[in-house]
Length: 109
Image 1 (cartoon, rainbow, N blue to C red):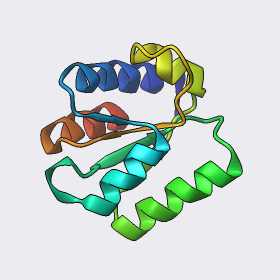
Image 2: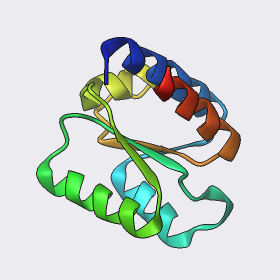
Image 3: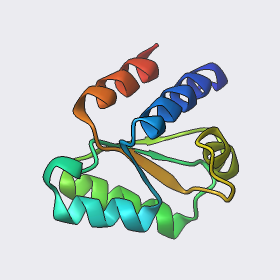
Image 4: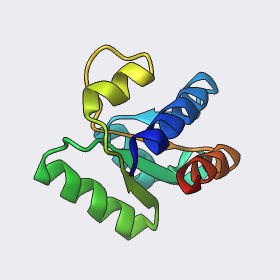
């Protein structure tokens, strides 16, 4: 993914966070996938610097629950900073169908 695309995605993720439709962190994302329902993740964004174990865990869950997964080219600290968090984030997920369309548009441009 290009740097310009990353910036569009990070801005769009910020909008999703302000709308309260983001799930932060791998444990919370996996839990939301297991429970399903209205708050189930529609698309998962993973930081580029996640460990192999974390990447495998996210990939396996996304594959099993048929959730789209995107690996960003930015690191976890950049992802967290874009969303107003102070520590690093391995992954975030969008749980709203309409905002998911916005994210897919940001990815395709």
